[in-house]
Image (tube, rainbow, N blue to C red; front, side, top):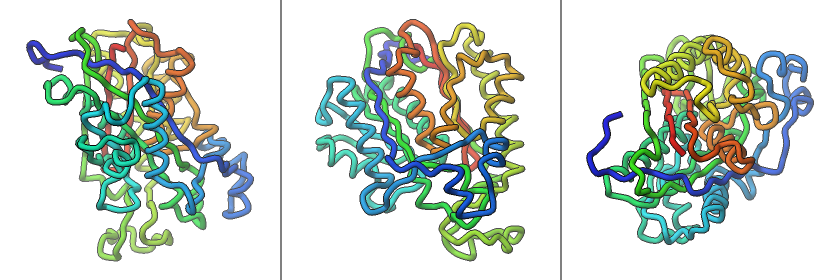
Length: 334
C-alpha cells in the first residue's frame, strides 16, 4: 500500500457490537423446514443464530447500538465524530441511509454519513475506506459499523439459505494517530460482478436470471447457489490471505489474529489448513451467531478486542468475502 508523505497513522480506540436477544436454534429450524441439528452442524458448524424482533429491532437499531457501545469503550461522544460509515445490505430504507439515522441517534450532527453495500464484505470495505480517509487528512475521527438483519430477507420455508444466516452488528472508532506506521498497512478491495447471481436478492421478476426462474424462494429474499459460492469462497479466502502475507512479508506467526468472515466452518477450516494458520489465531463464533453478513467480522473484532486478544504492537488481519461477488482484506498495526 503506497503511503502518502506526511500522512498520519490510524488508531482503533474502541469497539462495540450488538446482537438480538432471541436465539434461533437448529432444533427450532427443524420444526420449520426439513432439516436437523446434526445435518446443519455437519455442513456449516452452526448450532444457533440470533434473529431480530421486527417490532423493535433491525439493521438500524443493531448498528446504532454497536456504535454506541464502541463510543462508550473509546470514551468519546457521537459529536466527536467527523464521519460515520455503515456497511450493510439490509437497509430498512434506501433513503435515508442507515448511517444518517445512526448519526442522528448518537448525536453526530454535522458529521458525514453514508452506507457501503458490499454484502458480507461491508465491514472490511468500510474499515479500509475509513483508514484511507483519515490518512488523506480530510477526517480525524470516524465511526465504522457493519451490520445486517439477515432474518428480514430470509425465506424460512427454504432450507439451503435459512439455516445459515443471523443478525448482528459490529463497530469500531478510528482516529488519526501521530505514528504513521499505525493502522492499515495493507488492504485489498475486490469484486467480480460476472458472478452476481450466485448470491443475490431480486425484488422484481425481471431481475431473476433465466437459469433461476424455477427457484421457489420468494422475491425480496436472499437466493444463493451454495455450491458455486462455496467454491468461490474457499479459493478466494486462501488467495486473499496469501496475498496479504506476501505483500507485508509477514507469516501467520507474526499475526495476533486472522479475523475471518463467519460464512461456513468448512470454508474457514479449509483456509486454515492450506495456509497453515494455527487454530488459536483464527477466531470462530459461527456456532453461536451463524453468518451475520456485514456484522460478522465486526462482531468477532469486538469480542476479541474486549478479551484482550488483539494486543498493541502485533498486527492483525481482517478478511471477508460476500455477494457481488466481493472480497476484502486489511492488515492492521494496532
